[in-house]
Image (cartoon, rainbow, N blue to C red; front, side):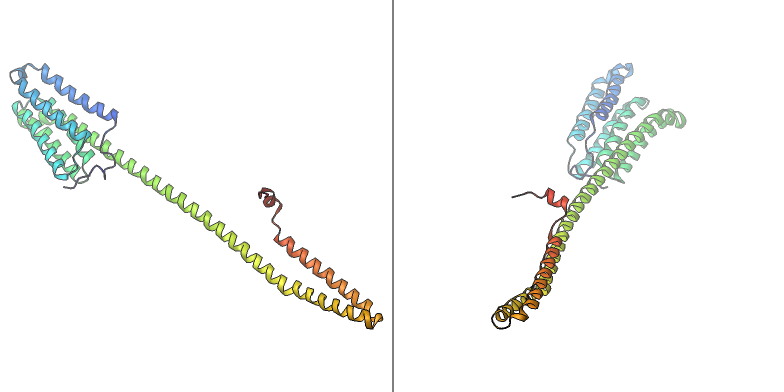
Length: 274
């Protein structure tokens, strides 16, 4: 039979509301024990066994054993204590309420199928002694209500653990999605930066291919103008007009490339100034 360790268990301790209900069940058993006249000759023995049951139950409820073998030994020992209480007077049906508490603990501390095996054992111990003492039909009728309580408490624990597991899985998935979103945002920023670098490289190539060649032509025409200024005045005017056109064209190309490098108005407005 496999068990859950406290570190692996989703919920190895009950909430305060559930714990209060469990101890109320135990108080009902204790009050019935003290109040019934047939028990009085053996009342100290009953109270001693019930107190021993309470000690073991409380220890396992709040400080569950880590070793699986100790947990199984605990459930076996508790079953023997309740069965010992039953054996002294088989007709006392109120004692089987103690199996409800053990069924709750089995569902809380054990994994399937071990939890359901122990719950099944407690259900059998709840009804078989009464069926033996009172008859099959009457004994089963008296045991049905506590047996139903055992199943309800066990089912409550299992459903609560499944909900807790689903909530943790959702939180883990949400954390992974948030991390993935941050990575995507980082990648998007890197892609944007890379796109900016590529755009600047393209503009640099255009500057080198077009504007630099134009500026080289301007330089050559300026040198030719200097030569013609000394030798042939009549050919100087067309050359100066050509030089002016080249300069105007280079200036327009530079303005166009600078306009492409300029950020949009919204971006430039939000950019901090030095």
